[in-house]
Amino acid sequence: MTRPPSESGARPGSGPGRPARLSPAELARARAAAAQLHEEFADDSDEWEELSGPGDRDSLTDVPGGVRLQKVLAAAGVGSRRHCEELIGEGRVEVDGEIVRRFGARVDPQHQVIRVDGRRIPASEDLVYLAVNKPTGVLTSMSDSRGRKTMADLLPDVSERLFHVGRLDYDTEGLMLLTNDGELAHRLAHPRFGVPKTYLAEVAGPVPRGLGRQLLTGIELDDGIAGADKFRVIEQVGARALVEVTLHEGRKHIVRRMLAAAGHPVTRLVRTQVGPIALGSLPPGKTRKLSTKEVGELYAAVGL
Image (cartoon, rainbow, N blue to C red; front, side):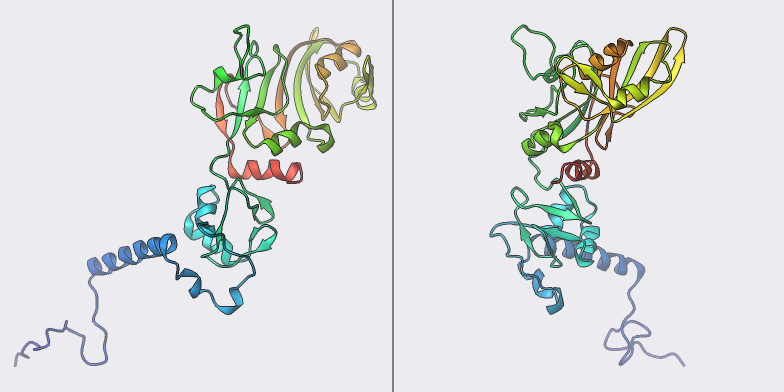
């Protein structure tokens, strides 16, 4: 005998006390709607922080009109919004030195210091951090009254006013860092913070075994003694040698002058690294943005 259809219109298998089953299509639509609601709630709802339990409260004062912390982290490239919420919930995010666990905390990324796992992140969207492979024949300047090629010519699409971190000679090539973060630029360039710079130098050879010890001990120059932090010979071919020199000195032409004083004048000089940032495979004349991780490493290198 055939059972008559239910007058209630309920789905088969959904009797009293039993929830109705959703079809796969309905389930997919429900999940999509929930995800969209989550994003909208995270961006716009002032009720978000009410979901935080009493144990998740902190004493950080929300900035009126500020930006939600997880949104700042995601915009800085730390990860997806969901991942940033997980970092906050795990107590791995600090604002002005205080651990924040509220997803709804509002902060000012322009003025507050935000750290993830102890590393500061570039939270302000106005700040620019670039690595440039400067070719020879380019001035380490943003303008030149004599019309010579400058760093600005390598950055046609950058409108911000940038500071170059230190200088490279007109005939020296390699890694330059540019930023509009004035405090970071100052500290990276100042010898007091001891940020090492590494150079590859092609010199007259052969290189004697004692050259490294001589450079590490210190070379007498006309403006005082200058010493390297590290030195190694990369290769020697006939009357030419390739050596690597690392130092935190900032005096003019310092690498060329040191090697010339030691009897090995430089024929080509390339800077390959500044602190934790390496030139890598960046072609001459090209530019790349530093990653959030790299900027955090620069902050750490100078105590910011």
